Image (cartoon, rainbow, N blue to C red; front, side, top):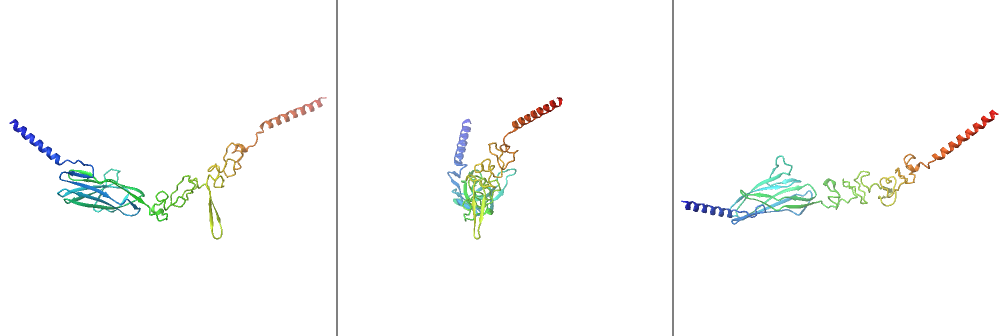
Length: 305
């Protein structure tokens, strides 16, 4: 009886091992489900670059080499884009989650077939637009496609169009830094950004002087560091390299350097107070007092005689 039980147990163990061997997924988590009966692979493709405002078409190619049809659930993630044509993908926002929403769709794969799934979106921002892996799952397996990165570029039509979010950073080909683009770039680069408010761009504290004639107008631009103090735009406070202490630049620097700043009052600049004559005044008052005392004594002595 015991031998019979052991024989049955051995047969069940061998059968379980054979089942496990035939249903192992050595590539789970990759872009392929495979076993001796067949494979499922998924590849995601899209253009390498597009112009902002254009529609981006994402294509997912799913290959099924199984001799039977299968059903696959797709889960797609992306953010920062408008939905144009989702082709059956349903939006799902995870409750209470701050992550971008995902899109789900179920696809039936005929046996030994290749199925193409696609959707269309419009990226909202310039630069790299990243689309993560598509998550795919069958009734008992899960795998992923490859991720994608698409470069979203400006139209490069030599016209700076702030209404299309073009500026010196997103589209330097159309928006050079010295042209209006609704963006202030307050760095010292010897270029005055016309979009900066007064005092924001150190290159703009140096001024723009305009000379007009009957037919033309000529603009001469100066910058801080050209060794010329362009008053009133430049002064010791915003450009000390061009306007040294003591210069007549409309700015009282209050620096004690033995130079009286003509823009300061005597109380503001210690160099404008003049020499300290306190000692001389005391000596003068002492001598005056002594002379009065001597004169008084002489007069008093004369009366006594």
